[in-house]
Image 1 (cartoon, rainbow, N blue to C red):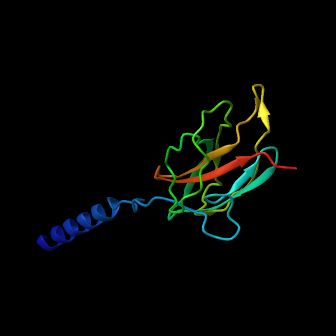
Image 2 (spheres, rainbow, N blue to C red):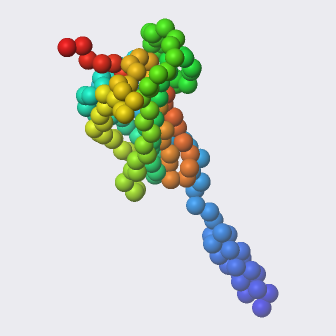
Image 3 (spheres, rainbow, N blue to C red):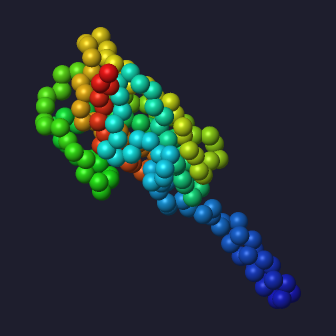
Length: 164
């Protein structure tokens, strides 16, 4: 009788231990890779008003990617949140009159651990207030995985009017 109680006790503990084992916790940030030949834009690139371009990058996560967003805003005052080592040549500081602003979020297909967006974008010439200001801008990429970890990439770019 004593032996069977001991066996039942150890079986109970074993079942309890296995039933309570937790799923592996995702504690890693996703990655934004723009260090390959097709990536665009990269730090110090130029984009032109009224011309389409493709945003190309590689997103990587150890478990599952969630979503990404792109923000473009003026950097006429030379504020800093670039994540790149390369320093770009900036135009002189100037006031913003009619700067271009863009913010948009995008989903990533469920179950993806690697995703390469090839997103066609067009920066318009202007809006109801006239032509957009050309000059220094930030192209800010934010990536979130399914667990909520995030990574950002801040690029300095120029947005110009194409000289004909």
